[in-house]
Length: 234
Image (cartoon, rainbow, N blue to C red; front, top):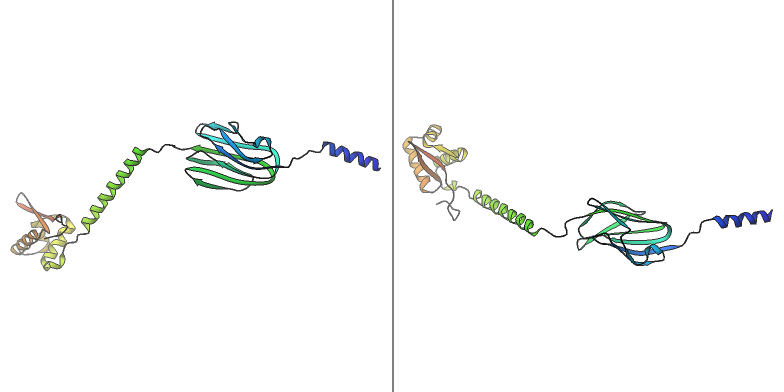
């Protein structure tokens, strides 16, 4: 009985798979052309210091980096440095990974323990040379927009000095501000002011540079005047 048991144990040992104790601390530097430079420390033959393009493939604008090793590793750590201006579209790793970004390059760092080395990254490479002309156009346009906004805001900020006006002048100015452009006849009909009084007050507001009067046919068209270069009403 003991002999049979011993034979069974030896037979099982002869067919049982042998697992190597692999480890790795490696970096994969991926070039723009798909060539991967492997460096670091590992006892696995596929992770020895070398350069290879067997780990990458391209379809359209998307690159695929596939680092799949069927052997088990007791532990490993890897760093994958993608080409500059790359963006990751898909990532498969045995464990959680972290990203670091510097010098326009994306670095993927991950670890594993008692498992296969299996990392797949799909990425695309953006423009490597900035379009300085396009950038200058965008900046110039932004500056123009800011200047126009500032000038417009600055003009709107100059308020009419209502405190120096009489009550009738305030009514006249308020009506012109509301309607933007009115004839003197429309102003008289709306405010019910005597014609002579209205004419005197309008002339006073014109002299103060608050109202602007233009003759159109037999009528005077009134509008609010724009402040002078100093931004003040006279």
